[in-house]
Length: 312
Image (cartoon, rainbow, N blue to C red; front, side, top):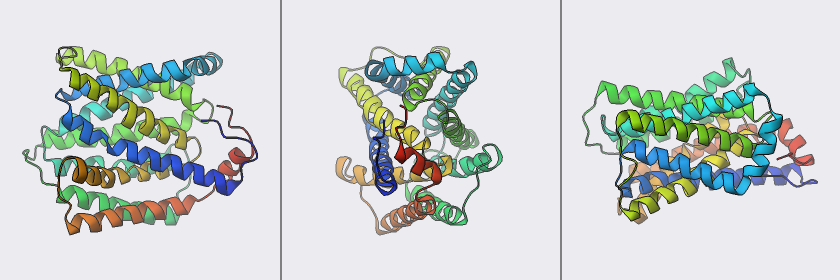
């Protein structure tokens, strides 16, 4: 996403906010579309990353190839590692839903921003503002409250809970690498390399697990395409672009808006009721996100990016 020259810092901040909002809305459709798809978790995850890679390769493959040819083997390797982490995130988290309660899985996966914040401070050496930490705690409490309010039918299994934590840790690795790599690599080159590596990993994983990749109903393939286009191409790519301009903890905190958006969509599309308690939890989550976003408003890196072309 190139940023035009002569954009004021305030307008650039609005652009970033708009991209993040678009990403939250897009990923909020994921749980709805996955529920409608009649396919195993590994199959859904594989087609999500495969089709997203194909779409982005068609639209931005030439630009990405030019960037990748000029980049170092280290950055390409890190992008591949990020893809592996993304594959583990999807496979572990979706599979955890069949082994533990929905509430337990949602709460444990919602710990991703905590791991991102820890990794940012100790690995990327980026400071955390006190206001951000306050916003993180508020948003986390709201998201966990939503998870607790959700009724789950599965047994509370130690293995399922462990898989949910693995999913959260893998998502944190994915975001931290994205923040690091995009200091030197364009977003399009990074996401095509990462999504491609994730698709390859999930393909091998599905073969080893004997998860079916063919023989689904046509409407399921259509849902695979929607999952790839909306939550992945639009949603995840928006967050990856934001990682180029904002800290990884801040972007990860905005992801806590997903359960709020998913609950609202479930109300309209799945006829799931929203209790007053969940409404309060949603307000708490969004309030924490706003607090965290306000803490970072317009860093110096963003001012520089707003003043010149981003080079993407």
